[in-house]
Length: 274
Image 1 (spheres, rainbow, N blue to C red):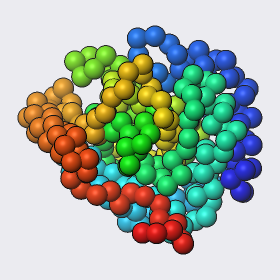
Image 2 (cartoon, rainbow, N blue to C red):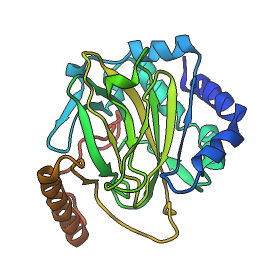
Image 3 (tube, helix red, strand yellow):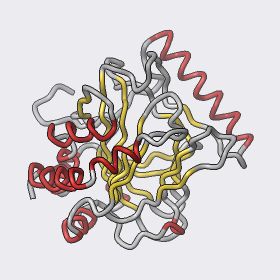
């Protein structure tokens, strides 16, 4: 199936209950978010899952902050995966997502600076964090996260679920089950702290990831921050270390305009300059 065919199906699903999704996304006193269940026909969603590479074929990110597998160089994998990733970048899909979220003038992450595919297996996790506020060149704000989960029969008890810290780290998180064939939309701004709970079963939780950017911030005022991690409430020592790490990276980026570590998570397409 080609990306425009996937996009046709995504568009149809979003149109069905557009007003419901819009109402959910804009509920007050929480991180703006909504979920769309049964996004694609079940057999299509299963094909996407079955096309995922093994964990060993993906890049490992392992530190105090996170433990996960990701990939952006999509031409290394089953072509089906590139098609579904870029289906979410179809302008028709962007337009209806703008209607749902109220975010304006959004553009897709065509170089997969932050998108692609991700996989979490047993023991993998992602600590609470704020996504960095801008793209790699600091020209556009990162404003929306689109996460499409494709692992069949994934129980909430397995872990690997999206956690939204609606009222900061001093209050209990809201858990969004990363269930099969579910799309989650989540705003990315100064307060959208989120995490992924540790996977506790010997299976893989697979996700197709996209971000949208905009010249306009997701809030009334302009802001800038690097990706900033926190320890969980039961990790006070880890929290001190992660907050110091974020402060150091924020200072370096603010002063020099450069990252401490250059990102390799970019889709280097054939014919483009390295």
